[in-house]
Length: 392
Image 1 (cartoon, rainbow, N blue to C red):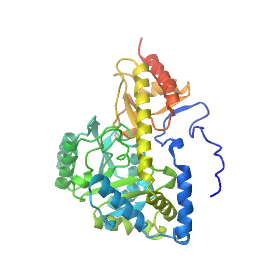
Image 2 (image 1 turned 30 degrees about the vertical axis):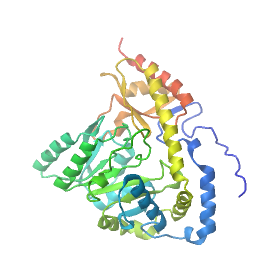
Image 3 (image 1 turned 135 degrees about the vertical axis):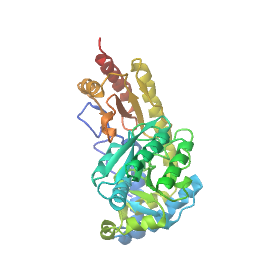
Image 4 (image 1 turned 60 degrees about the vertical axis):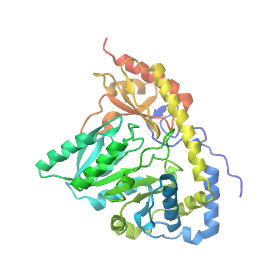
């Protein structure tokens, strides 16, 4: 295979003007993308099955890749799933969009965490549904408060149709839902008849201990639609993810008008990823990602310890991409952001992550994208910005 030309953007940040330290993007580190191996996998896919890979594909997705995902879930989690319980999507985002389109009607009550992933909130609002939020803490979704609100909504004649959750190393908070609360959530879904949409895209990126069993596993594959993605563990540009669910729910998604007309999600990407996985490259790559992102988390936490003033608190995630910062009472994130932005440090304010308001004194700091060498400088600026906002 011919030698690849050099990347003209190598080492250059992908976001913000030159010199910006962008604590905005929950993106993988570009230097950790396995470019050479993906190039080899693409070549192998074309040589092995080029005419098939470049044609329309099955609506449910490329069968051998579905089988690989099932085998990996069995190996890593001890969870038996079949091809009938899965569908390939163009990333987890398309999976959520498809679920919202097929499982809700305008005005339906849909529950999200507070905070929750801001792009997921935007996706759900497209339909439009009645979004309600339930608070989280360091152990994830407060299922005790959810149960209280379910009873209150029932008195109004309302029941939720969906509950969207990121149970493992949550975006944006980094929290992981405890095992007891996972069991509570599954119980409540069965009792009240709503679907759980389990966005589990960070599950593999743990730094010490893996997260508790998935909600899908605890529910025996019922009442849960579980989203997965190769974006976090391989490359987001491949736009490849999957949905797991009961066979009848998967068929409901497959039979949609869009799926029927598109010929499957990204057939060529499916063949590339399958070749990559068939060569045994995925697991060693995930091990490298865990080590690299763990080092970045540690670098960010250490920088926060050095530069943040008394009263500022932050999460200490066991995996994923994100740290969640809480300012002392009375300080506003937007004022800190204005001062930090003037010195080329940007981040996403907390309000973006709340469906019904909140987060005025909170913000998200991803550690996946900003190089460790820039974290120290960025946290120094943030610390000074916070102190400048404290009333004298």
